[in-house]
Image 1 (cartoon, rainbow, N blue to C red):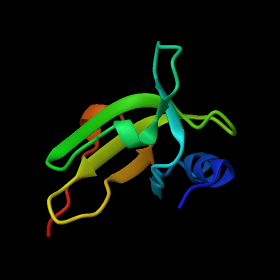
Image 2: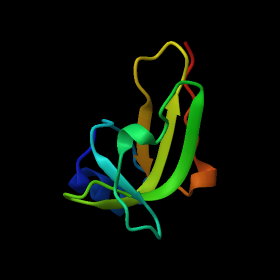
Image 3: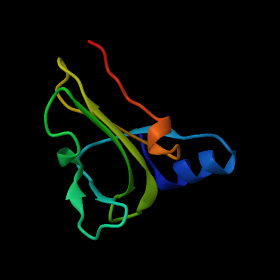
Length: 94
């Protein structure tokens, strides 16, 4: 579930958002200009990552993207948060 206004409202309450997003959008790694498909974050199972990005060309949001694709799942889980990359982690269990 993602909406830029919801992310902002959660942050305004001094809470940390932890919102799952679909992998059909785009992202850009901080400091880079190239937009990439969210499908490329973790392109196969047994992979995970945590990095600062800007998600979505339309209604962009600066966030940390937590991604994990565990065995037994059809697609990866992508979570956006305001936590630093080393503070967040996504792990799925079958």
